Image: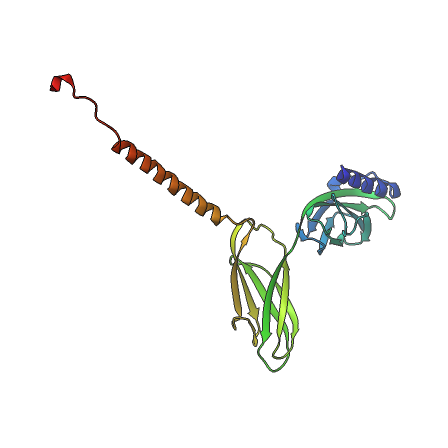
Length: 257
């Protein structure tokens, strides 16, 4: 309900300032930007509006159940001569799904709308995972702009640049990764260094380790179940053996006498 109210409020406020009479078919809107963000992450959303107008306007508003730390929380409108817009969006500090509502206008003049188009994006906000590694400079001089590349199960997920590493020193590096599409189970993370003179703690330029995402299976539970099953089978076997051993034969049939 809050989402609907926010969108209606934005539309009504904008229309209050500018007369309408627009047709959506005369205007198209395309948006480039991520659909997954980390908490408090800032990203750019590029809006491309096409239509036969010399002036365009575009507004943005965000909705969600908790927008603490998010920007913009109020509607924001800007103008462009070529229909290209760039909006900086900061995700809230609470994981959730937020919605970005864009409304574009082709202007007949500075006050009259000729056409309009709108688009809504659903954005998943997730808590970032901290990937921590330690690197060391083996040279007797400072090294600059060392690039670390990260791979998950062989898939490239991003990189970070270390501006400077002092001579013969170590440095802790933290890469914040948004776990998009990460399923529960065991995964392999690989980190590679680009540049000479810098290595990991294993004295190599490649570092790899395995981790489990989600709730790992309880191996104790499996062990207990195995022992329990063994005890049950042993008990049944013993009862069967004792029952068979203690069984007595009845009197011989009359026809054998």
